[in-house]
Image 1 (spheres, one colour):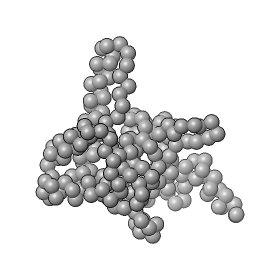
Image 2 (cartoon, rainbow, N blue to C red):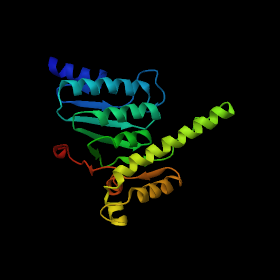
Image 3 (tube, helix red, strand yellow):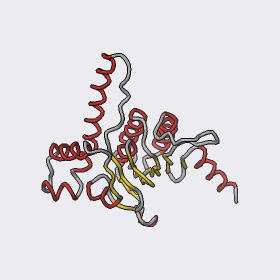
Image 4 (cartoon, rainbow, N blue to C red):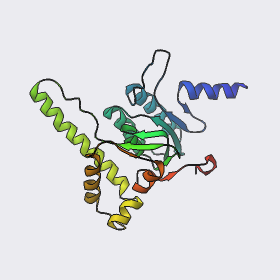
Length: 215
């Protein structure tokens, strides 16, 4: 193995990015003492923000994000979502394995959303952290309601472009009708769909089955 290949592998494994190919690998940190997958959290988001800014500063050429995540914290996930949304570069996200919970929301920030054939998509209302003094719990509950509304807004913005809702509500679906449908669906619990269904509902743009067809 030559020095270039060694440097490439070092960057991919230690920095989760490749400056030359403009690729970022969005996944959890791992080590000998990690027993559970923490999902989206501050270490992931901080590493991603640095990598995203580095590529965005260097040029405005397209960026590809390889995402494999079980989801996680809302605030850390939205930091990633906003960084992608504000990028001056065209951003493609490829989802591997699962796009669920917070990672399914991050996925919607991309200009092009690709999902691999055996990846599943899962959306739901997240768990509550409301514990403690009564008034504090009341305030947190109000904010968590706001979070749910933002999530539905993000999903609906994508879903109005999906074949399912265009067939159901017409070529230009009413966003409020889409929101009502999604809200009702998520009230039934975790919503699991396969990669083809994710495209049909508008959560993804297409299934990526061949690296040669990435672009």
